Image 1 (tube, rainbow, N blue to C red):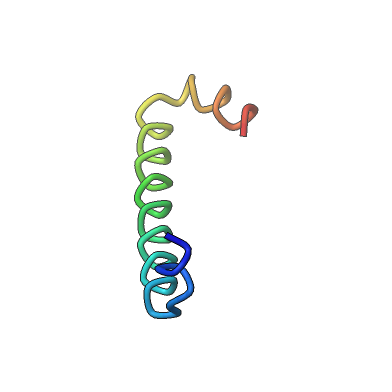
Image 2 (tube, helix red, strand yellow):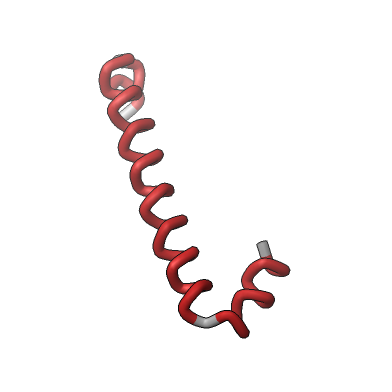
Length: 47
């Protein structure tokens, strides 16, 4: 596994995938918060 990560191309690809994943998660979270404004307070406090 370590050898895989030492290849810069693969590391870059992983970072890109992670960024896309987090962006997707953030978008889903924001949509959920917009859908239920009363729960928005709780999630923002926990963050």
